[in-house]
Image (cartoon, rainbow, N blue to C red; front, side, top):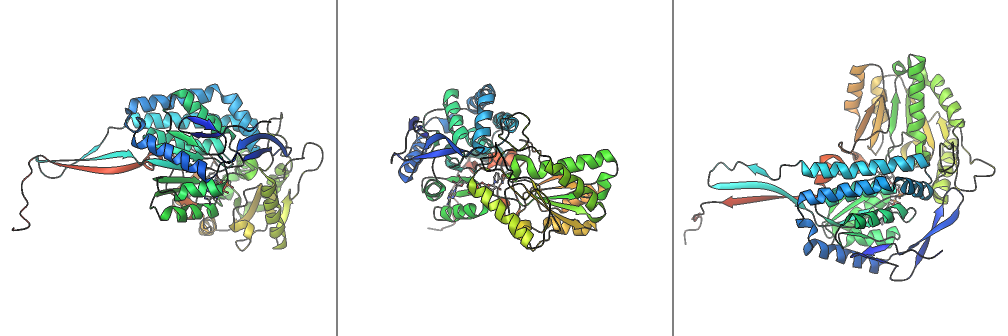
Length: 497
Ligand code: NAD
């Protein structure tokens, strides 16, 4: 296996300046299946310099918006053309099922098309009435400059694209640093941007560790904005590192997302089946390694035993395996660290009094040589437990119960995060009341997980700062500028002399 040239600087593919490489592991069987360049500070500085040059002297920030939008659409077409290969690569690298990998590619293509449409449909600057025919006042939006884009391992292509598409639509240049655990599809995306005709230096990538590569990007004086998706602890480091140069900071962090189920949502057998099915999906898709995973089930006391019994029964039947194998419903966790962390949370919950209703163990036998863990349901949970307060990022669902609507809302909001949450009820008035009271960036009513490229994504509280997708997702990558033109200048005579 030869080391890939996975660092892209100023239009050139390179190995790391130090010559260092990193092994990429298939989490389904714990074997090495690729080598990437392990970039360092020198590579990062070179990438920032290339992005800076391309922004200050290059054509991209001044390229007509129709051409920028056309390029984004070409990228979407190329993504769709490479759907099978990209989906399979994402599945192998991140351990998700092949179908999830394919869906990710579709969503990514949609995001590129959405931002192309958004910039094409804008009417340009906003004229401001300054109260005089002699003044022309207009607010315009310009690209922010050089963007550092730092992404996590769970949705590598998707998270990179939610940043890259609006950054390019707005006319910025960038350096992307994918997770060192799953960098491969982001490297492929940079190849597709090249193929689509993006000028050299606009898109740069440095593969490597959070520290030094991400840390250097966050503090670099020539970076104008850092957009980070990842965990709370790295996010706070990024914010601190960005402070000295007062760069713009956008953070998409974790979640501890409530799924609130009222008994009236389950009155017919069909509705009961839907709510249980969606609760499973909310908690266990991609083995729970989803920022918006519905990892806290908050169920009405009168429904409790029936709901948890069925949920646990179905959780035990979830088929684990390599994501590309036929019939597999859940892949492995991404790394031995993630597996150990999940086991540790389950052990601590049991020690604190939680009752195990499903899972709580690694699967045994052939085909489970990787980092697999059974979907786990923990009953009798309460807010003092670490597993209820902290993000596990594994297939672990905790169960709490409530008796009144107020209690349900209080439990759902009892988190330092505020990324997403759901309410299940047949009562439309209650649905709207509860949705209005939840302090979360996305609230689903009688659903879980869908998002739309047109609708903002992001969190309240410690789930982050700023929004991706929607018009706000484009605004992150722009500076507003007020241009005030005096058409009939005269002296103001403030000073007599
Ligand atoms: P992580 O914080 O460990 O790493 C994220 C990225 O930051 C990686 O590229 C990593 O190399 C880099 N990094 C690490 N330390 C850094 C530092 N000091 N300075 C700069 N960069 C640094 O997160 P992860 O384990 O890769 O991803 C899981 C986390 O991401 C979860 O908390 C999850 O909730 C969150 N997430 C959030 C969203 C969202 O939309 N809000 C989406 C996906 C994932």
